[in-house]
Image (cartoon, rainbow, N blue to C red; front, side):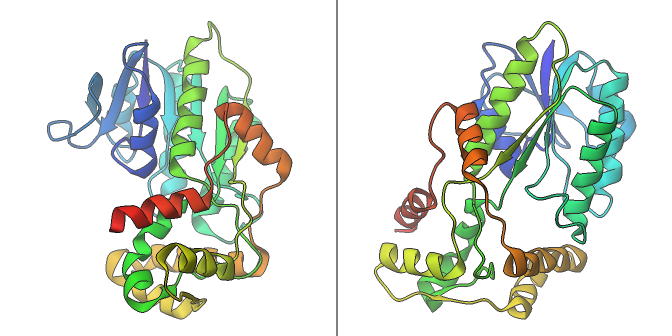
Length: 289
């Protein structure tokens, strides 16, 4: 039997693949273009896409454990709910599903509400799924290179309530550990859920000060939601940019802080401390040089 990883070419899927061992179990990676895919040695590229339900059902043949990641599209919930149904029909014994931290709390955000709907199905039918709920990715801030180095601005408008950001490598490792645990079991395991939150409570001002110290130059915090939306519009569909703007507005209003218990539970899953934002920032700044 095999583990199938969806979203395999993306930010999180590629991290999941990097922590799985193809020598221990067959690993398959779903991709639209298997002929050009560049996956780790030993990983088998499988043609498929969650938007093509018949193709996805065919890709599930011989799969015992599934990493399920929804795409950033307007019909995300439809694609993922159909995929979850297909996995259940195919007899997949275990699933690791990537949700989002505070999916239920931020009900007015489309990409949060989509994931909350999937979580409701998992709970309603008591499916053998591990739900991972990551907070804001630290690596999103690697895109701020020009703003930080050229303009001296930390321009992610997260507000002053605070976020508990998570390193994508911790997400990938947590997912890989749960995939292997479910794959090794001789029967479907009970559903489980983890909130993946970093150890730091960080505000926009905190991050501006942190980057200032690392870069050795003054950095100010830019909290302008309108500028955030306009800056993103050339790079993504307007509906998705507006969705992200709404998320930032929620962060400004409420924050998204993890508890000490959530951090401890996640670190128990990882078997080590979670990576800090400072470690990420220092590593990123060094790569910019």
